[in-house]
Image (cartoon, rainbow, N blue to C red; front, side, top):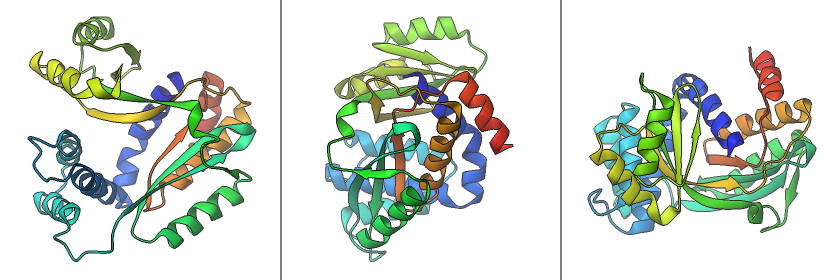
Length: 254
């Protein structure tokens, strides 16, 4: 899970730039819409996925009107755009890293063409359905900011609250649970008055792939480019981000 934790750190550093490009609100709105559509209601008190999506939107200072429009679109009460469709593309990236590109789009042909263009240009290859996804497990992830707390003390509190595994960096601690335990563990953490930065279900690599620093940097750049597409919700990878690869990536990104 170390690769997931390190990639989360990179994404936090990129957050401000993403907001400036106007992508953050678009993706947050889509998270809300899909949470409403998948669970069949727009009530965050009974729709846990919607509550998580709305919490993320509010934390990013997304306007209330935008949130409401996203809910109405999920309910089918909006004329904005066409029907949203979930699509996943599987691929092998530089050095053989496994990639899953998760797309939410109202135009399947446009999304496929854009993803294919970037994958092909990076020298990566599309894979058949299922040939990559078996390398990942679904896990619930709850991210808690340190905010001056001792990482060790916070980790013990999260374990007491039901966390099955823990990963920490300089800014946050990530608690991992089975997907079906995400809601009760999140509620238990809240009862302990521990602030939560994010809570979601994600695909985590069973066996992170160690590749050369050069291929690791190419993979991270490919992931960044894919995530800049409006239709792409997230890109999952089994890349093991070593300290050497991080140093090379930061040189290139500087």
